[in-house]
Image (cartoon, rainbow, N blue to C red; front, side):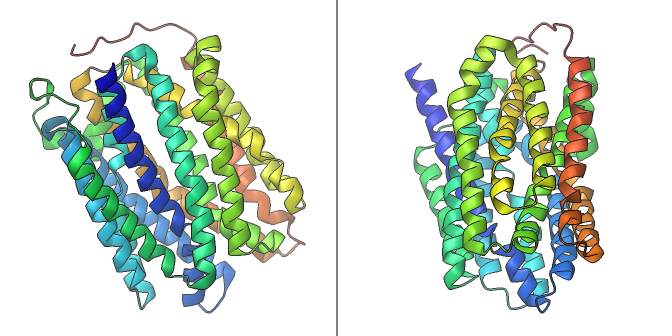
Length: 410
């Protein structure tokens, strides 16, 4: 038990530092793009959508490969390689003299920012099925802590220089690589590893795993829709709140920090008792319903203070991720956990091919309508509708109980 807890602690710190580095650049990247296009917010929204689409395309291609590699070589080298690549990428973006240079940096980021799938597989390796929801909740809490500190720090640093957050993010990622090199143990023993094969490592081959069980495919569908809705925040939040409420980068960073705090409270302190009381299936449904209400509130709020009241509802989505991840990992053996997480990461990649572009275009349309600001909430209303679709599927596919696949069985 002590060894398992130590291993989980190692991977949680890795996730924390990764997210901290990612969060630092969130408040400043849209503004940096806006500066390259002469301050045109609508044009910046379209360019940001293109950037995020290309980032997601690289995730779609790279995540299944990294998942399959982690099943073959182990989780440790994949996590470390991702951290090193991210550190180099942030330094490239910090030096970007043109929009094209910045674009190249985002492409590299998409290829290397896939350690989350290996980290999740790591947790599945060292945690028994009945405790995975709570363990995945800890990953979500680490994510939330990084999201609290990252955007707040990024907004503050960006106030002095929009490129400074990229330097700090690069330093954190490289420090994370050094930390992992010395202290992160391997979780997947050699006798439980799977031979690497391109038929499993390519995106379509990785997604075939999800068709192995009807409920697994249904759960994956809800995760797919959830990832679509999730993109509304990174693609539209900064430009939306700046345009509609006049928020500065400091205010945006602080607001994103509050989002992270709420996420930490839910995933760090509430997931375990709530799942223990109502079960993973009901917690999955609760997370989707709460998220739909929160996003709808964001889209309808006429003022900044009212917008902030959506946070408790939006934080409820924290019940969804750990619960649905636990349900999915219980349906595949240990030597396919990396492939499963690669498939899940591919979902984020697939949705990222069109969702950021879709939401930013809807935001640009709302700005073009120029009706006093209310139309700019359309991206959040659209995201809420997508979560309602996911909620419907989740209710249907989780009605019957399915036996847990024991570790090591095929």
